[in-house]
Figure 1 (spheres, rainbow, N blue to C red):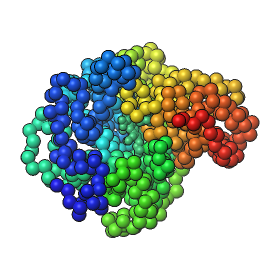
Figure 2 (cartoon, rainbow, N blue to C red):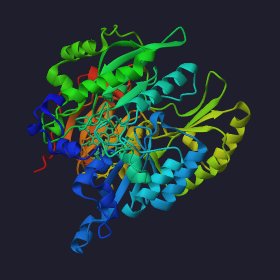
Figure 3 (cartoon, rainbow, N blue to C red):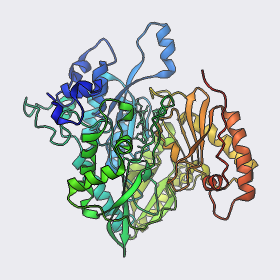
Figure 4 (tube, protein in one colour):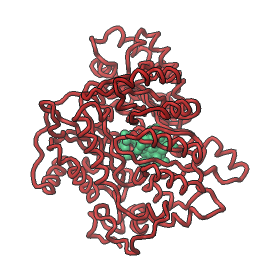
Length: 566
Ligand code: SRM
Ligand code: SF4
């Protein structure tokens, strides 16, 4: 039972999701009963919400939704299962195991996400437990990959490039372990474990009965690469390296992309830098920040519940004072560092210890069909490690000098070598899943990407800037899963074939793009981009990126309004 004294808001005013969490016995609900119900492929509304905390989303195949409705059939229910892989690292055996599970239980291959983990789509209810046990047998799990909790902690660039990279990666893993929910519901429901006790009350010492008001995202970036988009995280930690050693982290708070086109009081927000902490404090520091959000986040209005809104409502000064009260010491001033890009470094790189690492381009992170076959073939004879990136790409890490040449030949043989040096524009483009699985998608994203890349390339060539990398991101709705508002050019879905066009983010991911045109189709947005790209070609300064050029020349000050949807 929750009491008013447990939280900063009266219990009666809580959002229904909060009340559901409170009575769920730490996320048990009636999930087990729902899995056993044979007459439907779905689970109850409440259990769909609780299952998110277990890393599982109920979805339906939207391509066949209306046809099934006409035939008076229930939607084609299926589940998306998201793994929690802090830092995104896997062994080849784990990859091959996931590949097998995806063939057996999922209908859409493997999907690398923008938070460097893996999702399997199209899993039927009857296969869920088998899949979850298969994931456990690989030494992995899905707990808190979704839900109102701390999501998988992301960590930038290859952990094996230097000692500092390894240390930061280890801290990311420790942070993830510290922030993970402790409920016994997960092993009980998915593995059939006996409950440790029927008293659930002490199970969640940090989260309590209500968990968090909303999701909470933590990310570690290692300059000069801002591949994780640190300014889009609820809590971002930027590694500060002094005399070749990791000294600590600059802290930034309150980033987030999600917004609703229907609410003016929802918006993407850039995380603000507030100070510096010594390196070994990082995991505990993340816990302190998360508990401030736990105690003060809005539990009435879910659209205003993210940490960014807590900060804007109560103020950064208030937050700093609360942080100091809980830590006992103020933050030190932020220290100097520099980012020079926010995409992945594709191709081969050599670490300080002499090992090689290769980053392969994977369009929209989708690994299915021939690509899945080829990657499996490669990993069957591969002695290194694997890492997913936050730009949906795949990294082969820890390849010795003597193995590099052989790995190169194998990549050639399997027609994978071109992925080390893909087309510049493709390498700087990411898109979210969207249709047909995402229930919130209003327009295509992943499935539209090949065509978008082709028409955009043609336009760039016509404007004389074919080789210029420009960050381009597309999402099927304004929620921002591909972090569009940090790109130089972004399209966010409004309706089938129609997008809002955002322009002017920075190449380093440290400035928000602005809405330039609403509800534009392909012809319209290409038409709007053409004169801007031409001006850029003719007038940009040496090394100036497209987004910086648009802002310097004030070309975004007058947004263009197009067809308004009724
Ligand atoms: Fe996301 C919801 C997919 C990264 C902001 N996101 C969803 C759901 C679960 C739709 C839903 O709620 O029903 C999508 C599932 C689609 C599907 O069929 O798989 C979904 N989000 C994804 C992924 C798979 C996109 C991708 O193509 O890679 C990413 C999975 C990350 C992971 O492994 O954990 C993904 N989502 C993000 C990011 C990027 C990031 O974290 O770096 C963001 C923006 C950052 C942020 O959180 O502000 C993001 N997703 C959202 C939001 C908006 C949240 C908000 O504050 O308003 C939603 C909607 C919601 O939560 O209500 C959402
Ligand atoms: Fe779905 Fe929207 Fe996220 Fe794309 S941005 S995956 S459409 S919620």
